[in-house]
Length: 94
Image (cartoon, rainbow, N blue to C red; front, side, top):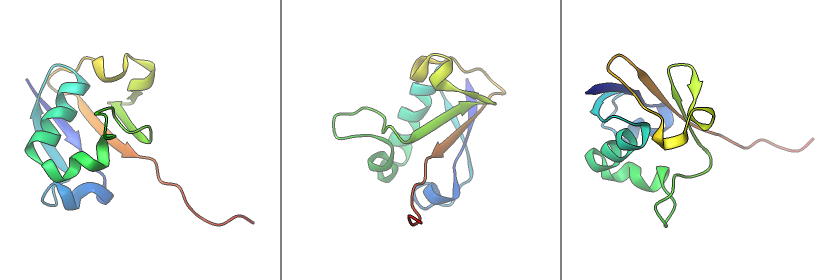
């Protein structure tokens, strides 16, 4: 089934500028794998060298953080929107 994955501005350079991508999959993990297969340059920004998802990558199915709903095994269905949110750190100590 086709599910919409929303891509943040910081990663659109790796998805040909697309902000929304339709992908096939039954779980969030399958969608992220499909994304990395379709756009190989994004892989290094999503995965560690050992193939695990980077800890600062947050994923939401509609409004639910997958860390609370089964992780990458969280099921998705047609009509869901999966939101990819990389945590951004920085600034200065004051």
